[in-house]
Amino acid sequence: ERFSAPEEMEKLFKDVITVAKQTYQWGLGVGFRDSEEQRERLKLAARNGWHRGYVLYLKGEPVAFWICVVYNGIVYSAYTGYAPQYRKHELGTVLFLHVIDELCREHMKHFDFGPGSAFYKERFGDASFKESTLQIFPASFRGVFLNGLRLLSEGPLNLCRSILQRLELEQKVKKAWRLRLAHPPTAEEASLKQ
Image (tube, rainbow, N blue to C red):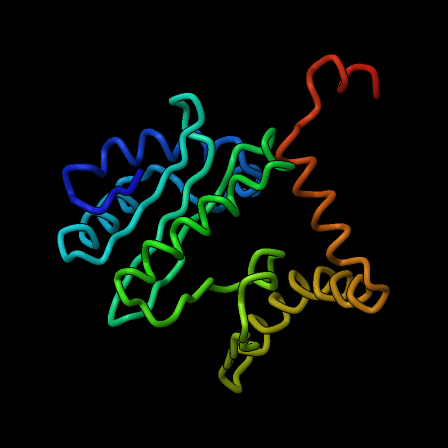
């Protein structure tokens, strides 16, 4: 089902949050959230005709979603997710192919998957661009101090990521982490580990 009009947003939020709570992104504290800011942003996009929200239903229950914004012939992917128990059936891919088909009929020319790496981006994308954040600190005691704090907080993570990339283990670790977040241990399993 497609949601693009402002009056359709409440049903979209209700159904998407049902699926979003099951995703690994939810476990990381990222991805779709039903917040007032989120609602206003998507409603603004809907009022301007830019919003496209899609939900895939299985036996009447929402199982996958894809939310994007279209502007000037470009589709900007915003949020996506699927119920992890259907992973092997690739419901996210099924929905994505439907979304692409519909957006091609609207004569969209480009699809921007957004930042980060993911299997589906490699699978369906044909170009990627490396971007990085530039942080500039003033040549003062305060600037040096702030940059030192940044290095202390980000350094260990960057070192671990660099080692995992060199050992070609980064994607395996990410996959294991996603699976763990999507399927947290039950109380019984957690007690057995103790």
